[in-house]
Length: 217
Image (cartoon, rainbow, N blue to C red; front, side, top):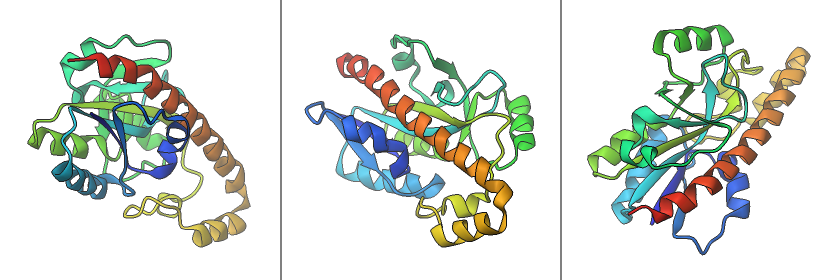
């Protein structure tokens, strides 16, 4: 059995809607971000031991060539034997992913991080998931779809967009922020559009990978 671990429900929405339940694949919705999600993954692994965990979700682009909708294999947190046997189509990138403590809100900070690390994408969970899987001897594959590019800054404060512990937005505070900052509405609408693109592309990417992964011995 392969387990696909999503930190947040909306990252998984399109994939879950079209998932073939006959496949030997479990979808784990953890409902938290960062280390909180890793704790929930650890709880899942006390009950089930998959042959592979796929850490799947969104990421922010850290290099100029990485665009919204691109799919990234985080090679620094993925089993190299599995990565070497994948046949990746157009739209895939293979490179490092870096895990940060919080969402990077400013484009300038993403640029600096990309230049200093060479990583293709940043996220909040991959390194934590890798630690949990390594402790149990379970191979992992990191799959991230880019939901915001290098030059995209967050149009609203990250803590209003997503509560770190619940992985859900703060609707009332978010509404108030947009009401009092109308210049942020356009950026917020773009963020939602990009998230839908990432949902669709992540689902398609997982559908591309799963038949290959299920055949691996």
